[in-house]
View (cartoon, rainbow, N blue to C red):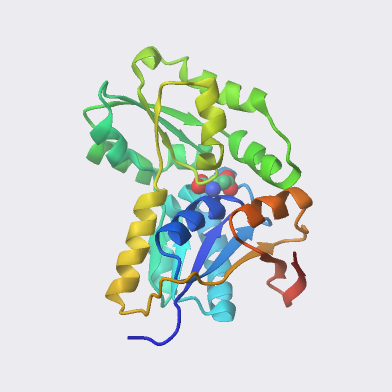
Length: 279
Ligand code: DGL
């Protein structure tokens, strides 16, 4: 048994780290959690695959050297569908990726028509196509790659800016498909999107929404058990690190506080910790 809490680093381009990290913390409170928001790189959904792979490998290698996590979660579908093999070659710790939950959606859909709501990058990846071929070949998968939704979620969390027109417009895109009427399940294949599931459900009621959060939390718990970590019932420490030049806004602090994350800091790769603010 290792005699300290494990440290889990949850990495995304932005607030998507919070949707996955909070699922992990809820299922397994013991680990110390580090939520990394790479504001320098946002939005990952628009990056070319090779450039994104190089960027994330470099970021995570540096972060792992500095922060010494015991496990890394790439809490981003746009990144995980591109970078996992390269990243696993470079990092010494286990890496858990978040990829579109097409398998459970295809297994539970009654109509066999499912929606895939993701970033433009995730929608066009070979990895995503393979998931569809392997697990949903009996289904019609309506793909919507939205460039607008993740930025709108960022604005909601950072500025408190509601954007009903974006929620509406994104769900309206599904309606262009001839089988849209029969769609009963939507895969939220970007870690930002579960954060606005209630908003999306309000404009498109009656659908089942599926994301990868719970499955990722179970996988993290399994890996830590297998590695024989001491996992006390009491909660570990939670800290958010913001990469880039942005300072946390009052709206973001309120969101973090709501998740029990009371420590956050701007984190500059070049200098180590550059500013600290706690509430
Ligand atoms: N959270 C990221 C994902 O799961 C996307 C956000 C972005 O485009 O950076 O795909």
